[in-house]
Length: 219
Length: 289
Image 1: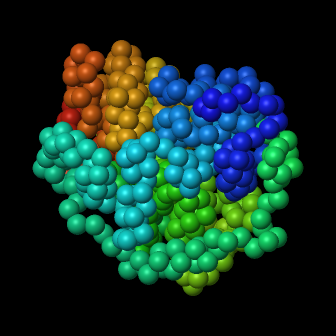
Image 2: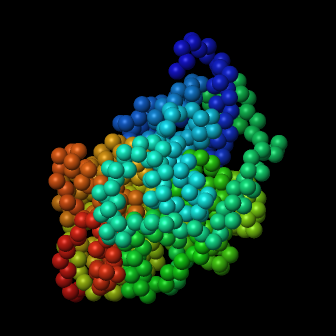
Image 3: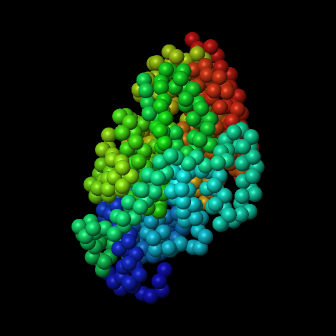
């Protein structure tokens, strides 16, 4: 959290930048603007099976967004601990897609590289994406090996007994299955890179100076 | 009946008994499963954390292939695949902006998708298309009062209301009750197992798994029936770690619901991949009435 006292309604330059990225990401969630309807009732936090392990509860995530503290959200563990079970989304009386909002925050953090070094979720997601881009399918062994080698190679040793038990029962596949249409995956990737710069009419016009709900209401 | 089949990456490896038992059940019921040719990964939860548009496009490639095949629906047994494919349909339907982007991306790969594919879970197909009457009529064995915990996991019933209740579904309860088994009281039936958190934050995930095992064991379950390869792996593969950490001594077999169903339908243990389970299922069957 920044140590400088905040003037209500006034955002730091870095917060403005984060806010812009987040609102663009939230805009990609159909119905994402319903975040403005939050009552702060806490049903999300009470429903979440992992909120006990979060440093910022799901309800507080929305409160911090409203207060202009996105950076604090991104520096917490919360968004990464969500396993996307969608219980909060199911129960939210205001119909806010909280799980998808957390995805938007994850993407904001990835884009702005705001997470601790060698952070597990970032590494695992990147390893996963690399595999899918390369083979068209996920491969459990390569995923775990490439993840743990970069994070904590000793953890691979701890996985050996389970790996061996699965191997004996024919539940380990050694070589990845490469799909014939892997070219199509590459084409999808390059076509989406070409879309990276949105056409002017697609760019949502945000008033970057606005704090909280007003910013979404305008979008 | 014929269904297009999307196995998903897990069912090619650790989830192999799910693939085998689902196919065996379909054979026994005279349902034809045709695998989608050259399918790719759905993107799971992780691709969505990196890039939403690409993630949707990659998932939509499968739906586009299914559509080009002339199919109207596709069966996805893995909960993660099922929820991601459904989400792809929903997001593309609800946002013309996303639809426009994904259309342009797919066009780059020579594909198009017109939102016509219904994504189905095998539990839904079995209970609602085939029907409990037909399944009961085809059953050769009664599950003879087997006390089981019906564990649906989170992603086949949420976020939108699909084929069953989002918190207390009962399709699987009804299915196996009809086949002579007894669903135990299992209020955690849609509680999350943690999924991939087992790799990222094992401390958090082991607690979730311990809660599920405790609830099932305390309520007298002889086994837990699952619908998802991730749930199956977390509950079965990490049971020893749970025991070590929490000082428990669980030895609960974790079976795919299709394995249990296959036993009632008279499929062989080999067909159902039962020997691939780490904790063997002990079960007494009685000839069906």
